[in-house]
Length: 404
Image (cartoon, rainbow, N blue to C red; front, side):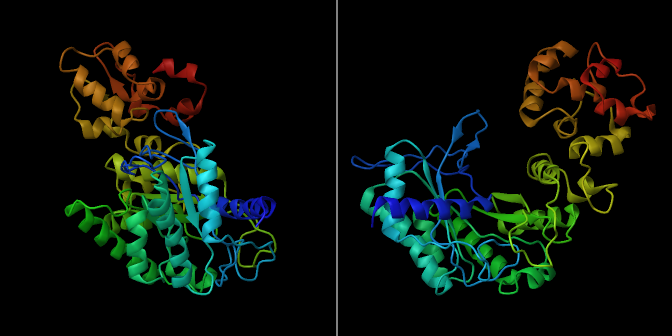
């Protein structure tokens, strides 16, 4: 097949893959390339994402095909959609991946697919791509495979042997929404597959063998149904606790051509997706519960004007200000503007001296937001809990924070 034909397919299938947000390489362990192998994985973000140290890394993100037997209302590749269709062979995906890697365009592969023929047939094709790259070409770069919950557990087991991360997209947070918008999908089937994957990953770690070392992830669509933010976060919290997911990704619904009448006409505000990511971070790394994050919310929706940690602080003013020289780590983590690294630096520094405001400024870039909530050796904010206009002042230009 000519290069022109392959790149025509690439334009279609790369564009079709853009709606899937659940790709990142955090947790991917180093894979030995061997004498004649190629590629490497760094264990941090991919897919034109920025890593914590500021690097931008990329991968080839495509569908094997955008043909699909399913007719999910929110999906542009659904069976009834009038879109241009294309399909790669296993060999074409392998050669594209190698060619892009050799040109230093990518550092790995994110491969998903519509359902063709059957879930087992589709999953087998995805596994063949990863297996061929690993065994025949010695490819040691990052590979993320989107698994199909209806596929045979044996095929998913095989996928984990060759992929750095596996994911199964839940898409919608409630069984009611799945029945209405994706009637061919079953929430129980998806979570059962997640449970099996969790067991395989845990067993492999105990036995010190390789199986999806980057864990598993999923995606939830925001705004395609009437689920509020609290419901979405409760679903995410359940997935983290019961299935040990590494990440839940939130993808704002994007209206599609010739959409079903059951879908909203407009997308949700992108800020809503951003707030969900911030709230998710509080769940995973800062000890917040869903109930604390949702406290006082309007109709179960997060505040779009302020981030969830600041929203919680404003509703719990009796907990502030806190003394950076005395407060426990758990309370310092709840101070707006202080991240986990900044808190750890504060705890280390205060062993040697009583911290002043200038000291805190050297330990965190978020002092302007944290200042009204902190006590230092030379700073005590004025009547924080008595200010009726505290929220307005915090939303005002940064220079007004000096009033605290």
